[in-house]
Amino acid sequence: MFEKERKFHKERWQRKSDQLAGRSALQKFRETDTPDLTPDEIRDREAERDDTDFEKRKHEEFREWQKSLKVVIENFLARVKNPEDTENSTMIIMMGGGMKGPYTAGQAIALLMMGISPKTVDMVIGSSTGAVVATAFAAGLEATLKSTVMMLEELASKNFIDTARFWEIIKLRLIKQLWTEAHGEYAIDTEDIRKGDMDLLYTVTEPVKGDEEPVVKHIDAKTIRPGMVDGVVSSMSIPYVTGEIPEIDGVKNYDGGFGRMEIKNEIEEFKKRHGGKPPKNILILPTMPFETLDEMKPTPSEVKFAKFARRHAGSLVQVGSLGHSASLKQIEKGLLLKYEQRKAFELIQKETGVNIGVLWPPNSDLTNIGINGDDMTEAVLSSARDTFTQCGMKQPDEIPLYESRKTRLKKLREAIENFKLQRKAA
Image: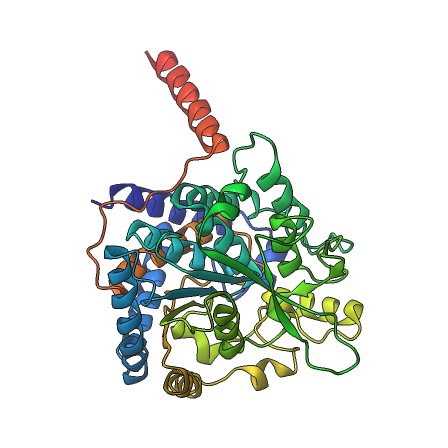
């Protein structure tokens, strides 16, 4: 049990140790807080972090969040047993977070493995990175596994994010290319998604004027023009940062993370499509671990990026999915305390009768623009297993991960090299 994951972590710790040792003297001087570490020391540091996070989850506040989550998960699982029970309606909201998307991807994989799927969920709303995972979720488990590896390999590279490529720091067109390439490895069947019963919406913001608050709106992935994948790109678009911004139904929209999530708006979107009835249950998948919410600070790279975005975007005051607040100045102001947020959800629940649960991901130290594939893979595996735990489900023997052609080719080359070395030794 867990043998593949143990092997992956051992190899990951070794690669991280080698990367630290291979830094130049200048890099080591700049990163004085990160000394060279052996694989065992890296393992021990991660264990200490996990122990600290575990203690935080024993706090009364986390237990209060768990109470509301338990009700929602029980109802979601009841729907799995009785898919026709539309009175027990369900909605999932997948939030944005830049390269923290693997947290949500791991959660989505676990939910699909439990049977919580497009056949038992009535609506999914995705914002920014959440729109990528929401679309994959709508296509099923196999598509989600493939799109997750797309994140871990193709998007975890300077080909996708490069702060030195100032004219296109984030190459969103790469997602469109990979998803729409005819017979491509990661091609997603948007027509099949359109035929499904589950509603799929993306969150975007309208261009702001002056100091106005960004206006959030939802676009229907199944009906927008020119197409579904363009809607995903639109939900992630940042002027002067992500390249050409597609027009959706003749309008250019921006990253869905620019505006504030108002849960009542999502409930209204559901009511529009379900005879005026609100959803019975809402499951929210954030990309901010519960353990780090009080300590949220931008990394030096994120500060640099935010300054660039703010300077070039003019009236745009947020950094969208690459930051959880309206500006650097608003990072502290915009972060609601967990207690206040929970109380706000409880108030909405009393007003509307909707059960609201938040599935907090575990902390894997991901950053909004980090592109370390190993760290992102660890986040997927940890989030998936943590989802089984929080849902009170038995752990599977293995969390499946799709093996890309690139990985298979690399393994084949390594096998050939090993064979040659063995022949030489003989």
